[in-house]
Amino acid sequence: MGRTLSRAIHGALALTVLAAVANSGHAQTLTDKLAIHGYLTQGYAISDSHQVVGIPTRGTFEYRRAALLLRFKGSPNDAFVVQLANRELGDSPIDDFTPEVQMDWAFYERRFGSKTTLRVGKEPIPTGIYNETRYVGTLLPFYRAPLGFYQEGSYVSETLNGIVLSRQITPASRWKLSGSLFLGSFNYLQAGAALAPGATAPTYTVTRAAARDVLGAQMWLQTPVTGLRAGLGGERRDDYGNFFGSTPSTHASKDWWASLDGSFSRLTTRAEYRQFSFNDGSINVRTYYGQVGYRILDALTINVQRDAMDVRFAMPAGVLKIPYNRDYAVGVNYMFAPNIVAKLEAHDSDGLTAEEPLNVLSDKVLRNDYLIASLSVSF
Amino acid sequence: MQLKVIGIAFLAAAMIAAGRPPAVKVVVIVNSANPVSTMRREQVARMFLREVPAWNNGEEILPVDQLERSPSRITFAREVQLQTVSSLKTYWQQRIFSGNESPPPERVSDSDVLTYVRSNAGAIGYVVEGTDLGTGVKPLVITEDDGDPGAVKKHK
Image 1: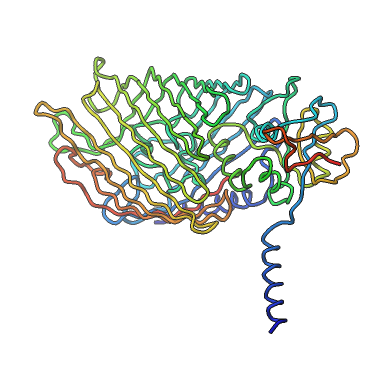
Image 2: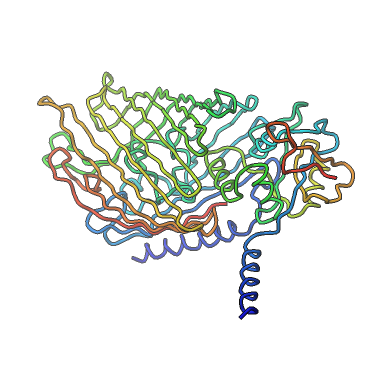
Protein backbone atom coordinates (compact mmCIF):
# COMPACT_ATOMS: atom_id res chain seq x y z
CA MET A 1 0.00 0.00 0.00
CA GLY A 2 2.87 2.33 0.98
CA ARG A 3 4.66 1.55 -2.29
CA THR A 4 1.49 2.17 -4.27
CA LEU A 5 0.90 5.49 -2.54
CA SER A 6 4.52 6.49 -3.06
CA ARG A 7 4.27 5.71 -6.78
CA ALA A 8 0.99 7.63 -6.96
CA ILE A 9 2.66 10.67 -5.41
CA HIS A 10 5.58 10.20 -7.80
CA GLY A 11 3.19 10.12 -10.76
CA ALA A 12 1.21 13.11 -9.51
CA LEU A 13 4.38 15.17 -9.10
CA ALA A 14 5.57 14.26 -12.58
CA LEU A 15 2.16 15.17 -13.98
CA THR A 16 2.16 18.52 -12.21
CA VAL A 17 5.57 19.44 -13.62
CA LEU A 18 4.68 18.30 -17.13
CA ALA A 19 1.27 20.00 -17.02
CA ALA A 20 2.98 23.23 -16.04
CA VAL A 21 5.38 22.92 -18.97
CA ALA A 22 2.57 21.90 -21.33
CA ASN A 23 0.43 24.84 -20.28
CA SER A 24 3.19 27.42 -20.28
CA GLY A 25 2.71 28.16 -23.95
CA HIS A 26 6.44 28.03 -24.62
CA ALA A 27 7.47 26.53 -27.91
CA GLN A 28 9.36 23.30 -27.52
CA THR A 29 11.18 23.79 -30.78
CA LEU A 30 14.15 25.09 -28.83
CA THR A 31 16.23 26.08 -31.83
CA ASP A 32 15.98 25.44 -35.53
CA LYS A 33 18.18 22.39 -34.88
CA LEU A 34 16.90 20.85 -31.65
CA ALA A 35 13.37 20.08 -30.50
CA ILE A 36 12.38 18.39 -27.24
CA HIS A 37 8.92 16.96 -26.69
CA GLY A 38 7.33 14.67 -24.16
CA TYR A 39 4.13 13.10 -22.94
CA LEU A 40 2.83 11.57 -19.76
CA THR A 41 -0.34 9.73 -18.90
CA GLN A 42 -1.00 8.88 -15.27
CA GLY A 43 -3.88 6.56 -14.60
CA TYR A 44 -5.75 4.86 -11.82
CA ALA A 45 -7.27 1.51 -12.77
CA ILE A 46 -9.41 -1.01 -10.94
CA SER A 47 -10.95 -4.31 -11.94
CA ASP A 48 -13.99 -5.96 -10.36
CA SER A 49 -13.15 -9.65 -10.48
CA HIS A 50 -10.01 -10.65 -12.45
CA GLN A 51 -6.68 -9.05 -13.24
CA VAL A 52 -6.46 -7.95 -16.87
CA VAL A 53 -3.67 -5.91 -18.47
CA GLY A 54 -2.16 -5.42 -15.03
CA ILE A 55 -5.33 -4.02 -13.44
CA PRO A 56 -5.89 -5.68 -10.06
CA THR A 57 -9.12 -5.84 -8.08
CA ARG A 58 -7.59 -3.66 -5.35
CA GLY A 59 -6.85 -0.89 -7.88
CA THR A 60 -3.53 0.57 -8.93
CA PHE A 61 -1.90 3.94 -9.50
CA GLU A 62 1.03 2.19 -11.16
CA TYR A 63 -0.54 2.80 -14.53
CA ARG A 64 1.57 5.19 -16.49
CA ARG A 65 3.26 5.85 -19.79
CA ALA A 66 5.70 8.65 -20.35
CA ALA A 67 8.36 9.53 -22.87
CA LEU A 68 10.86 12.22 -23.67
CA LEU A 69 11.65 12.74 -27.34
CA LEU A 70 14.62 14.61 -28.75
CA ARG A 71 14.93 15.46 -32.40
CA PHE A 72 18.14 16.94 -33.70
CA LYS A 73 18.10 18.26 -37.23
CA GLY A 74 21.54 18.24 -38.84
CA SER A 75 20.33 19.75 -42.11
CA PRO A 76 16.99 20.22 -43.91
CA ASN A 77 17.25 16.57 -44.95
CA ASP A 78 18.93 14.87 -41.99
CA ALA A 79 17.70 14.28 -38.46
CA PHE A 80 18.49 12.09 -35.50
CA VAL A 81 15.70 11.10 -33.11
CA VAL A 82 15.92 9.57 -29.65
CA GLN A 83 13.03 8.68 -27.37
CA LEU A 84 13.31 7.51 -23.76
CA ALA A 85 10.24 5.91 -22.21
CA ASN A 86 8.85 4.75 -18.92
CA ARG A 87 5.78 2.51 -18.70
CA GLU A 88 4.02 1.03 -15.71
CA LEU A 89 1.48 -1.72 -16.28
CA GLY A 90 0.06 -2.15 -12.79
CA ASP A 91 0.49 -5.66 -11.39
CA SER A 92 1.10 -7.32 -14.73
CA PRO A 93 3.92 -9.89 -14.72
CA ILE A 94 4.98 -8.29 -18.01
CA ASP A 95 6.21 -5.32 -15.97
CA ASP A 96 8.98 -7.47 -14.48
CA PHE A 97 10.45 -7.87 -17.96
CA THR A 98 10.61 -4.21 -18.86
CA PRO A 99 13.16 -1.70 -17.52
CA GLU A 100 12.12 1.43 -15.64
CA VAL A 101 13.47 3.60 -18.42
CA GLN A 102 14.14 2.23 -21.86
CA MET A 103 15.60 3.56 -25.06
CA ASP A 104 12.48 3.43 -27.14
CA TRP A 105 13.69 4.92 -30.39
CA ALA A 106 17.12 5.85 -31.74
CA PHE A 107 17.15 6.41 -35.46
CA TYR A 108 18.67 8.45 -38.22
CA GLU A 109 16.26 9.92 -40.76
CA ARG A 110 17.18 11.01 -44.25
CA ARG A 111 14.76 12.89 -46.46
CA PHE A 112 15.00 12.65 -50.26
CA GLY A 113 13.11 15.60 -51.69
CA SER A 114 9.65 16.18 -50.27
CA LYS A 115 8.27 12.70 -50.95
CA THR A 116 10.67 10.06 -49.69
CA THR A 117 12.03 9.39 -46.21
CA LEU A 118 14.39 6.69 -45.00
CA ARG A 119 14.82 5.76 -41.34
CA VAL A 120 17.62 3.56 -40.08
CA GLY A 121 18.01 2.33 -36.50
CA LYS A 122 15.36 1.56 -33.92
CA GLU A 123 12.22 3.25 -35.16
CA PRO A 124 8.44 2.94 -34.79
CA ILE A 125 6.79 0.43 -37.11
CA PRO A 126 4.12 1.95 -39.35
CA THR A 127 1.28 -0.43 -38.50
CA GLY A 128 -2.34 0.63 -38.53
CA ILE A 129 -3.75 3.85 -37.18
CA TYR A 130 -2.19 3.85 -33.75
CA ASN A 131 1.06 1.88 -33.58
CA GLU A 132 3.42 4.83 -33.92
CA THR A 133 1.52 6.89 -31.33
CA ARG A 134 0.11 4.03 -29.27
CA TYR A 135 1.21 5.45 -25.90
CA VAL A 136 0.41 9.14 -26.46
CA GLY A 137 -2.61 9.69 -24.24
CA THR A 138 -3.55 13.06 -25.71
CA LEU A 139 -4.06 11.39 -29.11
CA LEU A 140 -5.96 8.29 -28.02
CA PRO A 141 -9.71 8.15 -27.37
CA PHE A 142 -9.13 5.63 -24.55
CA TYR A 143 -6.20 4.95 -22.23
CA ARG A 144 -4.78 2.42 -24.67
CA ALA A 145 -5.03 1.61 -28.33
CA PRO A 146 -7.48 -1.29 -28.89
CA LEU A 147 -6.06 -4.33 -27.12
CA GLY A 148 -6.82 -7.03 -29.68
CA PHE A 149 -5.17 -5.23 -32.59
CA TYR A 150 -2.27 -3.56 -30.80
CA GLN A 151 -1.80 -5.75 -27.70
CA GLU A 152 -0.04 -4.30 -24.67
CA GLY A 153 3.53 -5.14 -23.81
CA SER A 154 3.44 -8.56 -25.47
CA TYR A 155 3.11 -10.32 -28.84
CA VAL A 156 3.77 -7.24 -30.90
CA SER A 157 6.34 -4.49 -30.93
CA GLU A 158 6.09 -0.78 -31.34
CA THR A 159 9.55 -0.62 -32.81
CA LEU A 160 11.78 -2.30 -35.35
CA ASN A 161 15.55 -2.60 -35.57
CA GLY A 162 16.06 -2.03 -39.24
CA ILE A 163 14.91 0.35 -41.92
CA VAL A 164 11.63 2.03 -42.80
CA LEU A 165 11.28 3.59 -46.26
CA SER A 166 8.26 5.87 -46.70
CA ARG A 167 7.09 7.55 -49.86
CA GLN A 168 4.22 9.67 -51.06
CA ILE A 169 3.36 7.67 -54.15
CA THR A 170 0.91 9.91 -55.97
CA PRO A 171 1.25 13.70 -56.18
CA ALA A 172 -0.86 15.79 -53.83
CA SER A 173 -4.34 15.58 -55.30
CA ARG A 174 -7.84 14.61 -54.25
CA TRP A 175 -6.73 10.99 -53.88
CA LYS A 176 -3.36 10.73 -52.19
CA LEU A 177 -1.55 7.40 -51.88
CA SER A 178 1.41 6.93 -49.56
CA GLY A 179 3.25 3.86 -48.39
CA SER A 180 5.96 2.53 -46.12
CA LEU A 181 8.11 -0.53 -46.47
CA PHE A 182 9.91 -1.93 -43.42
CA LEU A 183 12.60 -4.51 -42.96
CA GLY A 184 14.45 -5.71 -39.86
CA SER A 185 13.88 -7.52 -36.60
CA PHE A 186 12.49 -6.99 -33.13
CA ASN A 187 12.23 -8.71 -29.78
CA TYR A 188 8.92 -9.15 -28.04
CA LEU A 189 7.37 -10.66 -24.95
CA GLN A 190 4.86 -13.46 -25.08
CA ALA A 191 2.50 -13.73 -22.14
CA GLY A 192 -0.24 -16.21 -21.36
CA ALA A 193 -1.21 -19.44 -19.69
CA ALA A 194 0.88 -22.38 -20.85
CA LEU A 195 1.16 -26.02 -19.91
CA ALA A 196 4.79 -26.97 -19.33
CA PRO A 197 5.89 -30.45 -20.46
CA GLY A 198 4.96 -32.94 -17.74
CA ALA A 199 2.91 -30.41 -15.75
CA THR A 200 -0.70 -31.14 -14.81
CA ALA A 201 -1.89 -27.54 -14.54
CA PRO A 202 -1.10 -24.49 -16.65
CA THR A 203 0.91 -21.57 -15.31
CA TYR A 204 0.82 -17.94 -16.37
CA THR A 205 4.09 -17.40 -18.17
CA VAL A 206 5.97 -14.52 -19.73
CA THR A 207 8.77 -15.34 -22.12
CA ARG A 208 11.10 -13.46 -24.41
CA ALA A 209 10.77 -14.18 -28.10
CA ALA A 210 12.31 -12.76 -31.21
CA ALA A 211 11.04 -11.90 -34.66
CA ARG A 212 13.65 -12.05 -37.41
CA ASP A 213 13.59 -11.29 -41.12
CA VAL A 214 10.60 -9.03 -40.67
CA LEU A 215 9.34 -7.65 -43.96
CA GLY A 216 6.21 -5.55 -44.10
CA ALA A 217 4.36 -2.70 -45.72
CA GLN A 218 1.70 -0.15 -44.85
CA MET A 219 -0.28 1.79 -47.44
CA TRP A 220 -2.62 4.73 -46.85
CA LEU A 221 -5.10 6.19 -49.29
CA GLN A 222 -6.30 9.68 -48.43
CA THR A 223 -9.74 10.17 -49.96
CA PRO A 224 -11.27 13.36 -51.35
CA VAL A 225 -13.48 13.41 -48.22
CA THR A 226 -11.51 15.57 -45.81
CA GLY A 227 -10.41 13.48 -42.83
CA LEU A 228 -11.23 10.08 -44.35
CA ARG A 229 -8.48 7.60 -45.19
CA ALA A 230 -8.17 3.88 -45.72
CA GLY A 231 -5.17 1.69 -44.99
CA LEU A 232 -3.90 -1.75 -45.83
CA GLY A 233 -0.80 -3.47 -44.49
CA GLY A 234 0.91 -6.77 -43.97
CA GLU A 235 3.99 -8.36 -42.48
CA ARG A 236 5.87 -11.64 -42.57
CA ARG A 237 8.49 -12.75 -40.07
CA ASP A 238 10.23 -15.73 -38.49
CA ASP A 239 9.49 -16.22 -34.77
CA TYR A 240 12.00 -17.76 -32.41
CA GLY A 241 11.59 -18.69 -28.74
CA ASN A 242 7.85 -18.36 -28.36
CA PHE A 243 5.79 -20.94 -26.52
CA PHE A 244 3.49 -21.79 -29.39
CA GLY A 245 5.95 -24.59 -29.97
CA SER A 246 7.63 -23.06 -32.98
CA THR A 247 10.29 -25.25 -34.46
CA PRO A 248 12.85 -24.25 -37.04
CA SER A 249 10.50 -25.57 -39.69
CA THR A 250 7.32 -23.92 -38.37
CA HIS A 251 8.36 -20.46 -37.25
CA ALA A 252 6.96 -18.46 -40.14
CA SER A 253 4.31 -15.97 -39.09
CA LYS A 254 2.23 -13.65 -41.19
CA ASP A 255 -0.29 -10.98 -40.49
CA TRP A 256 -2.23 -8.46 -42.47
CA TRP A 257 -4.57 -5.65 -41.53
CA ALA A 258 -7.04 -3.17 -42.95
CA SER A 259 -7.98 0.21 -41.51
CA LEU A 260 -10.60 2.88 -41.97
CA ASP A 261 -10.01 6.19 -40.25
CA GLY A 262 -12.50 9.05 -40.34
CA SER A 263 -11.82 12.22 -38.36
CA PHE A 264 -14.38 14.93 -38.99
CA SER A 265 -15.24 18.13 -37.19
CA ARG A 266 -17.15 16.55 -34.30
CA LEU A 267 -17.27 12.90 -35.24
CA THR A 268 -14.47 10.37 -35.22
CA THR A 269 -15.00 6.84 -36.54
CA ARG A 270 -12.30 4.21 -36.73
CA ALA A 271 -12.32 0.51 -37.51
CA GLU A 272 -9.54 -1.99 -38.08
CA TYR A 273 -9.28 -5.70 -38.78
CA ARG A 274 -6.16 -7.80 -38.31
CA GLN A 275 -5.37 -11.43 -38.87
CA PHE A 276 -2.29 -13.15 -37.47
CA SER A 277 -1.11 -16.55 -38.53
CA PHE A 278 1.52 -18.25 -36.34
CA ASN A 279 3.47 -21.44 -36.85
CA ASP A 280 2.81 -21.77 -40.52
CA GLY A 281 -0.91 -21.30 -40.01
CA SER A 282 -1.55 -23.75 -37.16
CA ILE A 283 -2.64 -20.86 -34.90
CA ASN A 284 -4.76 -18.05 -36.28
CA VAL A 285 -5.81 -14.92 -34.47
CA ARG A 286 -8.49 -12.62 -35.83
CA THR A 287 -9.15 -9.31 -34.19
CA TYR A 288 -11.19 -6.26 -35.06
CA TYR A 289 -12.54 -3.17 -33.40
CA GLY A 290 -14.80 -0.23 -34.08
CA GLN A 291 -14.65 3.15 -32.37
CA VAL A 292 -16.99 6.10 -32.51
CA GLY A 293 -16.34 9.40 -30.79
CA TYR A 294 -18.61 12.42 -30.75
CA ARG A 295 -17.56 15.82 -29.46
CA ILE A 296 -20.70 17.04 -27.74
CA LEU A 297 -19.06 20.23 -26.47
CA ASP A 298 -15.82 21.83 -27.61
CA ALA A 299 -13.97 20.18 -24.74
CA LEU A 300 -16.13 17.13 -24.06
CA THR A 301 -16.12 13.96 -26.13
CA ILE A 302 -17.94 10.67 -25.64
CA ASN A 303 -16.30 7.55 -27.05
CA VAL A 304 -17.58 4.01 -27.48
CA GLN A 305 -15.63 1.00 -28.64
CA ARG A 306 -16.12 -2.67 -29.38
CA ASP A 307 -12.96 -4.71 -29.51
CA ALA A 308 -12.97 -8.47 -30.26
CA MET A 309 -10.43 -11.22 -30.68
CA ASP A 310 -10.83 -14.88 -31.66
CA VAL A 311 -8.13 -17.54 -31.64
CA ARG A 312 -8.32 -20.64 -33.84
CA PHE A 313 -6.15 -23.66 -33.13
CA ALA A 314 -5.71 -26.31 -35.81
CA MET A 315 -6.16 -29.53 -33.79
CA PRO A 316 -6.06 -33.14 -34.99
CA ALA A 317 -9.83 -33.29 -34.46
CA GLY A 318 -10.48 -30.07 -36.35
CA VAL A 319 -10.33 -26.35 -35.78
CA LEU A 320 -11.00 -25.13 -32.25
CA LYS A 321 -12.30 -21.56 -32.15
CA ILE A 322 -12.01 -19.64 -28.90
CA PRO A 323 -13.70 -16.28 -28.34
CA TYR A 324 -10.60 -14.92 -26.61
CA ASN A 325 -11.83 -11.45 -25.81
CA ARG A 326 -14.92 -9.25 -26.17
CA ASP A 327 -14.42 -5.77 -24.80
CA TYR A 328 -17.13 -3.11 -24.82
CA ALA A 329 -15.99 0.29 -23.64
CA VAL A 330 -17.52 3.69 -23.06
CA GLY A 331 -15.53 6.74 -22.08
CA VAL A 332 -15.73 10.46 -21.52
CA ASN A 333 -12.81 12.75 -22.38
CA TYR A 334 -12.43 16.32 -21.23
CA MET A 335 -9.90 18.35 -23.20
CA PHE A 336 -8.54 21.25 -21.17
CA ALA A 337 -6.34 21.98 -24.18
CA PRO A 338 -5.27 19.82 -27.14
CA ASN A 339 -2.32 18.73 -25.02
CA ILE A 340 -4.10 18.23 -21.66
CA VAL A 341 -6.85 15.61 -21.61
CA ALA A 342 -8.65 13.84 -18.75
CA LYS A 343 -10.41 10.52 -19.39
CA LEU A 344 -12.79 8.25 -17.56
CA GLU A 345 -13.62 4.92 -19.16
CA ALA A 346 -15.47 1.74 -18.26
CA HIS A 347 -14.85 -1.63 -19.91
CA ASP A 348 -17.00 -4.72 -19.95
CA SER A 349 -14.44 -7.34 -20.89
CA ASP A 350 -15.34 -11.01 -21.29
CA GLY A 351 -12.81 -13.59 -22.33
CA LEU A 352 -9.61 -15.34 -21.44
CA THR A 353 -7.26 -12.38 -21.19
CA ALA A 354 -7.05 -12.54 -17.39
CA GLU A 355 -3.48 -12.81 -16.14
CA GLU A 356 -4.21 -16.14 -14.46
CA PRO A 357 -3.24 -19.78 -15.13
CA LEU A 358 -6.27 -20.52 -17.29
CA ASN A 359 -6.60 -23.42 -19.64
CA VAL A 360 -7.55 -21.53 -22.77
CA LEU A 361 -8.56 -24.73 -24.53
CA SER A 362 -11.17 -25.76 -21.97
CA ASP A 363 -11.98 -22.99 -19.49
CA LYS A 364 -15.11 -20.90 -19.87
CA VAL A 365 -14.74 -17.22 -20.60
CA LEU A 366 -14.50 -14.95 -17.57
CA ARG A 367 -16.72 -11.94 -17.09
CA ASN A 368 -14.91 -8.87 -15.96
CA ASP A 369 -15.43 -5.12 -15.72
CA TYR A 370 -12.72 -2.56 -15.21
CA LEU A 371 -12.41 1.19 -14.94
CA ILE A 372 -9.57 3.55 -15.84
CA ALA A 373 -9.31 7.23 -14.90
CA SER A 374 -6.37 9.07 -16.41
CA LEU A 375 -4.86 12.45 -17.12
CA SER A 376 -2.64 12.94 -20.16
CA VAL A 377 -0.37 15.85 -20.95
CA SER A 378 2.11 16.47 -23.73
CA PHE A 379 4.38 19.26 -24.85
CA MET B 1 -37.76 47.64 -20.72
CA GLN B 2 -36.04 48.99 -23.84
CA LEU B 3 -32.93 49.73 -21.82
CA LYS B 4 -33.02 46.19 -20.48
CA VAL B 5 -33.16 44.76 -24.03
CA ILE B 6 -30.32 47.02 -25.15
CA GLY B 7 -28.36 46.00 -22.05
CA ILE B 8 -28.84 42.29 -22.77
CA ALA B 9 -27.91 42.78 -26.42
CA PHE B 10 -24.81 44.70 -25.41
CA LEU B 11 -23.86 42.01 -22.90
CA ALA B 12 -24.39 39.28 -25.50
CA ALA B 13 -22.31 41.18 -28.04
CA ALA B 14 -19.59 41.70 -25.43
CA MET B 15 -19.60 37.98 -24.59
CA ILE B 16 -19.36 37.02 -28.24
CA ALA B 17 -16.60 39.53 -28.74
CA ALA B 18 -14.77 38.22 -25.68
CA GLY B 19 -14.89 34.69 -27.05
CA ARG B 20 -13.56 35.66 -30.46
CA PRO B 21 -10.38 37.53 -31.08
CA PRO B 22 -10.67 40.60 -33.25
CA ALA B 23 -10.58 39.78 -36.95
CA VAL B 24 -7.34 40.77 -38.65
CA LYS B 25 -5.86 40.37 -42.07
CA VAL B 26 -2.38 39.04 -42.39
CA VAL B 27 0.37 39.38 -44.92
CA VAL B 28 2.81 36.60 -45.68
CA ILE B 29 6.44 37.68 -45.66
CA VAL B 30 9.81 36.32 -46.69
CA ASN B 31 13.39 37.51 -46.50
CA SER B 32 14.05 40.12 -49.17
CA ALA B 33 16.89 37.97 -50.59
CA ASN B 34 14.31 35.35 -51.52
CA PRO B 35 13.64 35.50 -55.29
CA VAL B 36 10.03 34.32 -54.85
CA SER B 37 7.36 37.03 -54.96
CA THR B 38 4.13 35.10 -55.61
CA MET B 39 2.90 31.79 -54.20
CA ARG B 40 -0.24 29.73 -54.21
CA ARG B 41 -2.06 29.42 -50.90
CA GLU B 42 -1.68 25.65 -50.91
CA GLN B 43 2.11 25.94 -51.33
CA VAL B 44 2.33 28.21 -48.29
CA ALA B 45 0.14 25.83 -46.27
CA ARG B 46 2.40 22.88 -47.15
CA MET B 47 5.47 24.85 -46.09
CA PHE B 48 3.93 25.50 -42.68
CA LEU B 49 3.21 21.77 -42.37
CA ARG B 50 6.89 21.22 -43.22
CA GLU B 51 5.95 19.08 -46.18
CA VAL B 52 8.42 20.94 -48.38
CA PRO B 53 11.98 21.13 -47.03
CA ALA B 54 13.65 23.65 -49.36
CA TRP B 55 13.04 26.56 -51.70
CA ASN B 56 13.83 26.10 -55.38
CA ASN B 57 17.23 27.71 -54.82
CA GLY B 58 18.07 24.99 -52.26
CA GLU B 59 17.72 27.26 -49.22
CA GLU B 60 16.06 25.52 -46.25
CA ILE B 61 12.48 26.67 -45.67
CA LEU B 62 12.13 28.04 -42.15
CA PRO B 63 8.48 28.76 -41.37
CA VAL B 64 7.77 30.79 -38.24
CA ASP B 65 4.42 30.90 -36.46
CA GLN B 66 2.83 33.27 -33.99
CA LEU B 67 1.47 32.22 -30.59
CA GLU B 68 -1.64 30.06 -30.81
CA ARG B 69 -3.93 32.67 -29.23
CA SER B 70 -2.81 35.52 -31.43
CA PRO B 71 -5.43 36.88 -33.86
CA SER B 72 -3.00 36.67 -36.76
CA ARG B 73 -2.31 32.97 -36.08
CA ILE B 74 -6.04 32.25 -36.01
CA THR B 75 -6.56 34.10 -39.29
CA PHE B 76 -3.56 32.43 -40.93
CA ALA B 77 -4.76 28.96 -39.86
CA ARG B 78 -8.28 29.64 -41.14
CA GLU B 79 -7.48 31.47 -44.39
CA VAL B 80 -4.24 29.83 -45.51
CA GLN B 81 -4.12 26.44 -43.81
CA LEU B 82 -7.91 25.99 -43.96
CA GLN B 83 -7.93 24.52 -40.44
CA THR B 84 -8.41 25.58 -36.85
CA VAL B 85 -5.44 26.19 -34.57
CA SER B 86 -6.72 23.37 -32.35
CA SER B 87 -6.86 20.81 -35.17
CA LEU B 88 -3.39 21.88 -36.27
CA LYS B 89 -2.10 21.29 -32.74
CA THR B 90 -3.52 17.77 -32.84
CA TYR B 91 -1.94 17.26 -36.28
CA TRP B 92 1.44 18.31 -34.91
CA GLN B 93 1.13 16.00 -31.92
CA GLN B 94 0.58 13.12 -34.31
CA ARG B 95 3.58 14.15 -36.38
CA ILE B 96 5.89 14.77 -33.44
CA PHE B 97 5.07 11.61 -31.54
CA SER B 98 5.48 9.39 -34.57
CA GLY B 99 9.04 10.72 -34.85
CA ASN B 100 8.48 13.30 -37.55
CA GLU B 101 9.22 16.99 -37.87
CA SER B 102 8.40 19.47 -35.11
CA PRO B 103 6.07 22.39 -35.76
CA PRO B 104 7.49 25.76 -36.77
CA PRO B 105 8.89 27.80 -33.90
CA GLU B 106 6.57 30.42 -32.42
CA ARG B 107 7.29 34.09 -31.94
CA VAL B 108 5.33 36.31 -29.60
CA SER B 109 4.83 39.37 -31.78
CA ASP B 110 4.90 40.75 -35.32
CA SER B 111 8.17 42.45 -34.53
CA ASP B 112 9.74 39.13 -33.42
CA VAL B 113 8.52 37.47 -36.61
CA LEU B 114 10.03 40.29 -38.67
CA THR B 115 13.34 39.90 -36.84
CA TYR B 116 13.33 36.15 -37.51
CA VAL B 117 12.52 36.54 -41.20
CA ARG B 118 15.06 39.32 -41.59
CA SER B 119 17.82 37.18 -40.09
CA ASN B 120 17.08 33.94 -41.95
CA ALA B 121 17.30 33.84 -45.75
CA GLY B 122 14.91 30.86 -45.98
CA ALA B 123 12.33 32.12 -43.50
CA ILE B 124 8.64 32.59 -44.19
CA GLY B 125 6.20 34.13 -41.72
CA TYR B 126 3.15 36.33 -41.44
CA VAL B 127 2.25 39.55 -39.69
CA VAL B 128 -0.83 41.71 -39.35
CA GLU B 129 -1.60 43.65 -42.53
CA GLY B 130 -0.38 47.22 -42.25
CA THR B 131 2.62 46.40 -40.07
CA ASP B 132 5.70 48.38 -41.04
CA LEU B 133 7.95 45.71 -42.56
CA GLY B 134 11.11 47.81 -42.57
CA THR B 135 14.11 46.59 -44.53
CA GLY B 136 15.23 43.02 -45.24
CA VAL B 137 11.68 41.65 -45.46
CA LYS B 138 9.24 41.62 -48.34
CA PRO B 139 5.59 40.63 -48.72
CA LEU B 140 4.41 37.79 -50.90
CA VAL B 141 1.38 37.90 -53.16
CA ILE B 142 -0.71 34.87 -52.27
CA THR B 143 -3.08 33.54 -54.87
CA GLU B 144 -5.89 31.08 -54.49
CA ASP B 145 -5.37 27.77 -56.22
CA ASP B 146 -7.15 29.10 -59.31
CA GLY B 147 -4.70 31.99 -59.53
CA ASP B 148 -6.87 34.74 -58.03
CA PRO B 149 -5.60 36.78 -55.08
CA GLY B 150 -7.08 35.28 -51.92
CA ALA B 151 -8.07 36.47 -48.49
CA VAL B 152 -4.46 36.96 -47.54
CA LYS B 153 -3.52 40.14 -49.33
CA LYS B 154 -0.33 41.64 -50.47
CA HIS B 155 0.95 44.19 -48.00
CA LYS B 156 0.23 47.73 -49.10
